[in-house]
Image: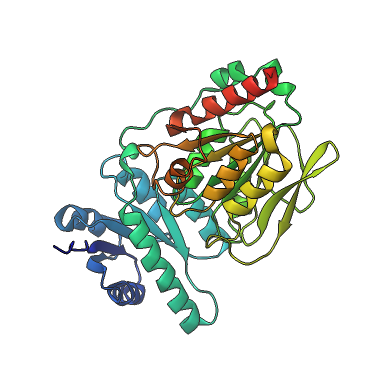
Length: 358
């Protein structure tokens, strides 16, 4: 007997009637998606959510009566639902989008700025894909959130062993739900941690802002990676959107290469490119961490890291927004074990100390 494919029910929230119409028609063009309702603002959306019970919400970032971020902050603790933000590429729009991801949005798409017809078609294709991914996202943790490490506890985890780990490198890969997961992990790290390199699937223009935000929250310094940057203790380098990030060893030091290139595993930057380079350059001096995300990007790279003697961890299903990339890394043998997100920072610190003791 054939399995009936589930139709993803969507509620569209946007203050522009024209945009609501465009999104309505564009989403309904996919037979796997049904727009069950639209709303001009969060107040109307709140009532329709309970009545229509959609699987996914698309939400405009900037709205006059209440912006999307404030709505999310009120909504998610009471009624967790996968949300895809529709963002503008203005500086203000980017800032609000990052706020929205912090407040619980699963992902975002950017409104086209030029070549409207082609840009709109491309945006709708991306939105349809992300709505389907979001429909399987696990956002239940927004109702029962555990506190991050307190500064005093973070300080307690700093040890001499960490300070002596100058030749170690930590590589973290993530996609859907990854901005929040990365924040939870690296805010646990003391300033004495070995150098960290990160690939988070994000378009150009957003990674610098993501790094800047993290820099204000972390004991480590966080910045967007620039070609030739040295990987050193106390520094986190975030791969730039639109450029692959790879690790190179030069004598006794590590440096990053940041170059544009074709998509690998569907992405640029690609976790696969980073992990494979870490396997080659870092070997047994590396730690690999795979966080939440859709697809298989980085899975084979993590296998290569483990074969090269690296220590490897992947986020568990319960704490993942999307258990795709961690699951692929785990089932292929690339991850030693699965770890809940709230425990990941401590686990990585433990591995560093263990490696430092030899």
